[in-house]
Amino acid sequence: MKMKSFALFALCPLLLLPARAAETVPLETLVQQALEKNPELKFYEAEIAAAKAGRKTAGVFANPELSTQLGYKGVHDKTGTLLGEGVAWSVSVAQTFEWPGRIGLRKAIANHDIQLAELGYAQFRAALAAKTRALAYNIFVAQEKSATAREVAGRFQALKDVLVQRDPAGLTPLLETRIIEANTLTLQRQASEAATTAQAAYLELNQLRGVAMDSKLAIAPANLSFRPAEALETLLTQARTNSFELRIRATELAQQGFKVNLTKNEKYPGITVGPYLSLERAGDRERGAGIAFSLPLPLWNKNTGNIEAAQARQMQAEVSLLVTQRDVERRVVESALVYETKLAAMSRWRPDSAQHFREAAELADRHYRLGAVPVSTYVELQKQYLEAITALLDTKKDALDAAQTLEQLTGLAIPLVITTEVKP
Image (cartoon, rainbow, N blue to C red; front, top):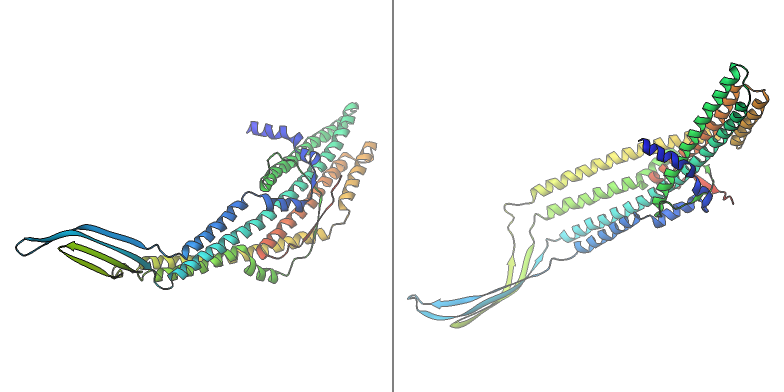
């Protein structure tokens, strides 16, 4: 644990290098890169290809069977006298035909496999876009937090250097110096933690984009503008129709219904039909030709166990759909409440709130040096400046997470406008 902590600490000075050494990339460009280059997309594409191949297999008849017999035949009279002998052989071709409707049921099951694979692919793309967008914005938030913490820590450090050079007369100046020193250490730690968070998000973002882990990039400052979400009843209605999870469960339930019908159909046997030809040369020459039928008699095995198992799985699919629907509805309500709460909080902000907090912190710094502000007020203003910036950033981040969750659950366009300002 000590080595790990030391390694992270050693990395801290390098954590923000991507922001200085790489080209600035808008947030939505990163999302598009992930949707184009994420390696896991190939897995879902292969799943769709496999399901389509299974659809071809489901509609193919069984191969005909060719059988032959070759042997010796001898003919004797009642006294055992050999009357003739020779070769006897026969050949036949047999084709098995499924009970009517069976192939159609298999095709229907295979078609639902394709639908499930396509839904899984679409769900993964939606989740990938949301994850990439969240990671990119988290990096921006972490960088802003780290920069603000370093800014405040720099004030404390500069002030501490001035106070140390003075000859403290009395206990109060000495204690004030220790307060400044302690806050400097705390803020430097917060800056390092924010930088570490940004670096971890960088690594995960590069993984999603399918690029090398050490690839450097800088994320353009993102300004998020949120709009009110649809009415709760509209969100719930759309979720019942568009939620990927519900669509997958509904498709599984429909597929299981076909599987029940298939197991019921399979209690009826297939019919094997085919021509045959035989020839025997034992004294006289005998030929035979005709059509052979083969039909298993369903006396002992009527597929009862498989039918009951399929019906039980159908019941499980029904329960799973119901449980998933309730879970989706709960998450829609929960995300809508979070989104509305964060939106209400942001509506009370002043457009220039961050700038006012920064100016107040700078003003306190100047007046403390002049002796017009006590150390308690100075420290409190610096901390409040950092906490206010953190609160502003975290509120937007939480609103973004809630908005993206609503988009994935309902299929409605995300109530969000992202503008970027690329700095040279």
